[in-house]
Image (cartoon, rainbow, N blue to C red):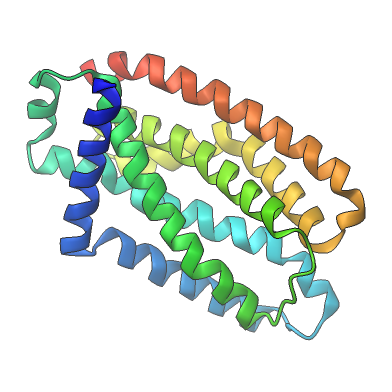
Length: 226
């Protein structure tokens, strides 16, 4: 309970700091909006084949907007010289990871809540699939991506080229998640008759999320000590 309480406190600290500065979240939302506008000009919304592109666009937004936030999560601690203070404080290193994860995940959800409806609106997309399944896929994909990304952000934070190193580490590891959620999203949005295939992809992503979340949670002590 103490670990969770500390993690929630650290997450609130990061979110409160973000509400004051509005640096990361604003950048993420602006980036998402620009991507949507560019794709809306590149593909004709009136063309039926454009609907096949939407699942990919959704996850391009989530991935790259997520990286913008992940890159800043531990770098800000390094620049403000507060990381050492957190490490020597009477708390478990895992609570630092959980706190950062919760803050990053919350901001990612805010970006998705703003950008995905805007995407559907601009592409004139009529949602005929299952909303609960769609929300579940977005949640699971974001969960796994942010869980792994937060861990790797901590690993890359001490590197001089951390902003370049993080994507190089993150993309190969999260590829199974991204393949699974893109396929599941495509089925849910365009072909609900194959929902059994979507469920199989969801199960794969869920298993991958849980395995890597536990691994990251257990290994964060060693990463933060480096």
